[in-house]
Length: 174
Image (cartoon, rainbow, N blue to C red; front, side, top):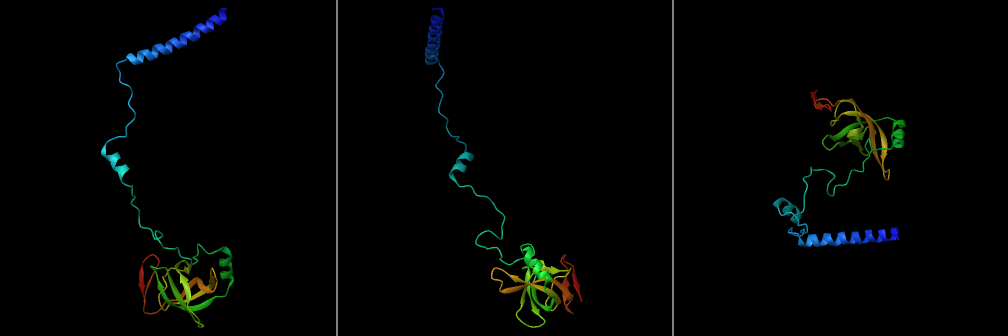
């Protein structure tokens, strides 16, 4: 009976403590805790009311601008580069080249349609100018591989009487 009676006494003591605690809190002069309220200062109110916008730098790829499908030296596949480097060397004259746009055209010496030239495929220190004699190899332009692009373009003779610019920006006149 000693063990059973002891267990019963502990149980009654626990209940009496709980009841005494509830009675004490009911008689306490402290107000009951209030539910949490959102902050009322102006900065948080402004953030909740208006959508947040970020200042972004202008990007050429933002909006409806589609990246160029033309293969550059970086985007050309290794196999296309190998095929082009193993091909024959052709001669031609630079028809036009725009440094700001990064491309131009070469008129082949043997005739035929003009060949596209990308800035990444120009070898040497000078920017091509109309009338410069060049040598180049050809590579097809995907996805249909119907058109050709000049690669490994080297200026062999600078056009006489024109100003030439180096890639670093120095102007040299003949």
